Every structure is written in C-alpha cells, then in structure tokens.
Image: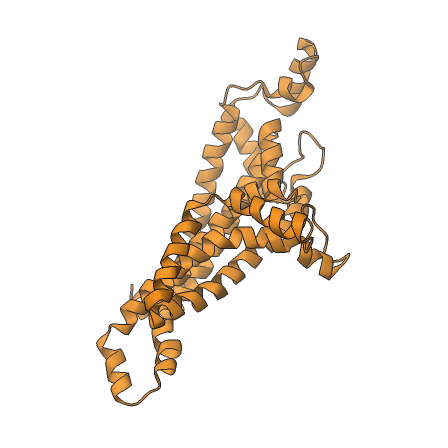
Amino acid sequence: MTAYVARRLLAGLVLVLAVSVVSFALMYLSGADIARHILGDNASNEQVHAKAVELGLDRPLPSRYGTWLNAALHGDLGLSWTSGETVTSALQTRAQVTLSLVAGATVVSALLSVALGVTAAVRGGWLDRALQAVSLLGIALPGFLIALFLVSAFALHLHWFPATGYTQPSDSVGDWLRSIALPIAALSVGATVNLTQQIRGAVLDGLGQEWVRTLRARGLPFRRIVLRHVLRGAAGPALSVLGLQFIGLIGGTVVIEQVYAIPGIGQLAVGASVQGDIPLVMGLVVATGILVVLVNLAVDVAQYALNPKVRLS
C-alpha cells in the first residue's frame, strides 16, 4: 500500500512540475508588455524599463523559472505584482471559500446521485424515463443559466437566500450557509446528472449478474443485496467519476463566483489573468495542480481498498 501511494504521489508531483514549466513559459512568451500593463499607458519608457528590471523581466526565461522554482520549493510563491500581498496569503484567504463550495457541491451531488441512480435502476419504468429526460436537460443547460435562474427564483422573488456576496462562517454560521446555498445548488446540478447516470448504469450491470440471482435464491432480502453488495460494486466507477467531477467543479467556480460575486479562487484567477499578475497566476497553477494530485491520490487509494484487481496490478 505504501509503495503504491508513493508511486502515485511521485507521478503527481512530476505532473505538477511539468504543468508549472508550461504555464510559466506561456505566461512570459505571450508577447504582452507586462511592465507596461502594470504601470499603465501613461508611464514613460524609462519607468517601464525600470519596472521590467525590478521584476527581472530582462533576464533569460530559464533563469527566471529557476529562481521562481527554487523559491517555490522553499514555500515562497512570491508577491502579487498588483496588490503587493504575498501569493500564499491570497491563496489561503480565497481557497477556503472555493473549497467550501466545491466540497458542498460534491457531497450534495454524491448523496442525490446515489438515491436517484439506485432508485431509477431498481424501479425502472416511468421514473427511469423521467430521470433520463431530466438528465438530458441538465446536461444541455449551461451552468451560468442555472445560476441565474436560481438567483431570480430564490433570491429576487422568494427572498430565501441572498443574491450575491459571501459571509464568513466565523461571523454567522446561518448566514454563511445561506450565502453558499445557491452557488452549491448551481454547481451540483451538472455533477448530479453525470454521476446519477454512472451509478444507474453500474447498478443495472450489477443486478444482471449471476451472483445476484444466487443471493436472491438463498433468501437474502433484495434491499440488502442492493445496498450491501450491488452498490459496493458500483462504488469503484462512481468514485472515479466523482473525483473527476471534484476537479471539474474547481473550474466551474470561475463562472459561479462571478455570478454570485463570491471572493474565491475563481474570481482571483480571472483578475490575475486579466492584470498579468504572473506570480499570482503561477501560485494558482501550483495550488490547483497539487489539489488535483491529492484528489486523484485519494480516489486511487479508495479504489485500491475497494477493488482487488487494483491491488493485484
């Protein structure tokens, strides 16, 4: 088990390193005049040149990356070029906001998907057909349209939730839950649709196996067979989809945080990209890459525990 985790972790760290190299090169080779962009059009050429020297833009690209990588390996991601705040501090402040949305949407979609997928597979009939129709609709609708509908219905008309903004849980747990309810709901729709289809298909495959008929012939209750045996077999594929969706939800927060004016990683990424704040962009790339590696590692460990074939491989 330890060797398996070590191999997966090493592969993930190599991936993060490769992504950082590509991202660093793309940011600096984009052709934009970074110093001019930071100072504005009214700055003189002398001021722009001095700023470029201050930021190290006059040095060769490999030298710049080596300096950044050495500092990053020591836990220093640098300072934001626009705000002067440390990148680590900016990420810590925003990450807890985004992760609360992503974690909430993951939990909601997982619970709903298990309930809907198992029910549709077991009951079939009109319920299954209705689920398929709703799934197609959920896949077709863009996330921002769902977010706007939720704001219009539950914030502007019913006044159940705030339309925009974010409340820290330390200020008020109740207001915090109300501020993240609609964003989580908007993120959960697409994730629930995809995961429900996966669980439904896996449960149907399980119910068609010979060992299920054998267990039923021995007198085991059908409910117990589904919940303790069939659903366990469906857990492996569902976990893989859930891990991918967790990663996808991080990208989905870029739109959702803009709609609901939530100060999270998505909003920070948009601002940093527009302003050409390379240290902040690189910090976001590294933090996101590490998070992706950890999520994939958690899914792999769960698969290792659930599936004997993984252990044998």
